[in-house]
Amino acid sequence: MRGGYIITAFVLFYPRFVYGGSLGLVEDYLRNFLYLYIIYPLSLFIQHKIVCFTIILHFSSIFIASVVQLISLAFVLYLSISISLSIVSKEISCCHHNMAVKLYGFVGSNATFRALASLYEKEVEFELVTVNMAAWEHRRPRFLARNPFGQVPALEDGDVTLFESRAITQYIARKYANKGTELIMNDPLKMAIQTVWMEVENQKFDPVSWKLMEIAMHRVRGGEEVVAELEKKLSDVLDVYETRLTESKYLGGDSFTLADLHHIPNLYYLMMTRSKRLFHARPHVRAWAADLLSRPAWLKVTSMLRW
Ligand SMILES: N[C@@H](CCC(=O)N[C@@H](CS)C(=O)NCC(=O)O)C(=O)O
Image (cartoon, rainbow, N blue to C red; front, side):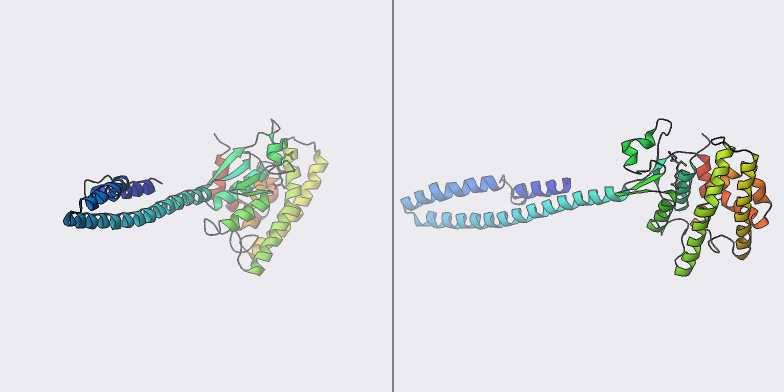
């Protein structure tokens, strides 16, 4: 904006810089007025031809200079306005671009951790906005506007608002495709296979591992029988994983993808329970779990638990 003002000021007063003495347009018009209505009629009145001729010459040169000045003034006003507007619009687009990604959730929540892992893998700058569940913040209108089901996490990226951790990870993976780890396959068939394993995590692994975690954390009651039944279900899932991991290094294919990442939070918590022996009993599952839990992006997530 300042550049525009400087140019405008310079042009308004440039006669002073260019041919000196004049204070710019105002003075020029005063002088024209003086010549046109006083000196020129006076000279006619005096009928002194030489004086008259000189005055006409002088007047016309001033008139031409004024017209040129007016045109240049209009041009520079146009320039300065367009420069100012372009700077303002640049500021708007710059702010929009830099608007931080905000993740609403809390440290410790496995669904929040899932979204956090994807943000760190993609090296996306973000702000974690803590939702105070104890203060029932997730059930207040402000948060319900972000997720009507009142659960964390929720994501805000400029005008975009999303909830459901797995939808958030997929959005991050695609939106920031050119950054960090590639988390989704490009080939349609490979992507379909990856989706199969993302579904397996959501439909088979998550429900059973979630219940085991809840029992281990004493959030829900569960006797020996319930735990044994859940562990049987988990073993069946892990048997399928063991077979799959003999075929490819990761569940979704040969590289680490969201199909693996989605497992990490529950894996992390289950490794703190007695159910970890089920993972250790299967060599490929064991190596896969160790690999996932030692990823730098995941270590950044868990470092949030220690402060
Ligand atoms: N399917 C959802 C699950 C979200 C979820 O269960 N969030 C928990 C915290 S880990 C929550 O907000 N619980 C509070 C409630 O359900 O009232 C997702 O993946 O985002």
